[in-house]
Length: 360
Image (cartoon, rainbow, N blue to C red; front, side):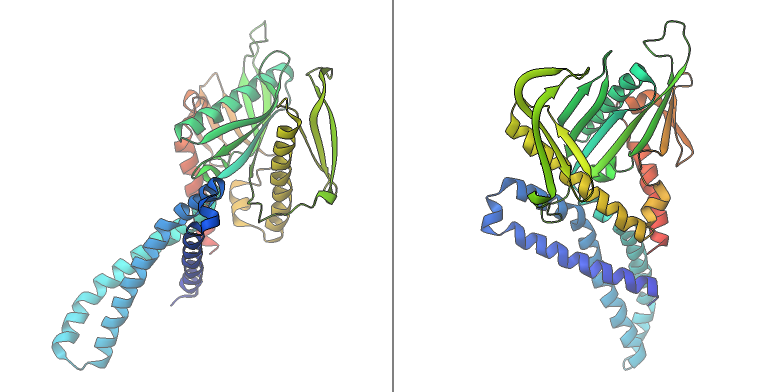
């Protein structure tokens, strides 16, 4: 067996064990009564169950291939040997084709197990128009989530002075949400005549998108002693206090310096919960990026780091197109803004899969 196939079988064996473990956990009494845990485990199991089923089909085919090879090698019964020689090429072809299909699925299977992400959209350069553009992007992702029946829950929302948003944060949950949104991190540039422009000149504005996989609490443990917390009154767009009750929560993760502020809710308790949720995602993402850099991760090399300084797409109103710079392809602008990102995402997945297959 080629080394690449041997490595693939090792990975698939581990995935089958993971699938059986998830199935076992879902039948445990303390899990059955925990709706949130059931949902998390079910998303993970659903993401790999098809792949594991295909692998078990491959194992059955591979066993038949070995049996036929053994009959031919022993040569004890001429009629059986003749029949085995006739059937063997077809069985081998089926097994090889199935293994290739499995390898294509495997490289993105782990992505599909992530069922919850934190989406952040921030206005970049361009003043009031940048805030309007950031608002358009936030609505685009909300429409995309609706198309896929994902839940889209705003966590924090800072409006721009003339509309749009200075910053918006949402929790997006559902099967395949990381695979669908994980390529969106980076700078999104728009070239258009802003609503704020009186002389019809085209302006260039940007907005920054970050998509953070929300970690399972078992994957990251942040001791409270590592977090500095301040409770303040909420701030409005101009910095003024918008209420007299201290409900805004500001957290700083001391080891990394990562800071979050949550003031969307009028309840300090709710803001505290959301702040912890966002802090965990950002800290997890911080350490994950360090690990990816150390491993020269193939995904990062192909689709880019998703970093806040990397321009990934330019939306051109005059031509009614959006150019994705990683694919070097154009897509219909209105379709994207209406939340129809499927063709674009599928192209990114295909390109990513090819690169990652080469690295197996």
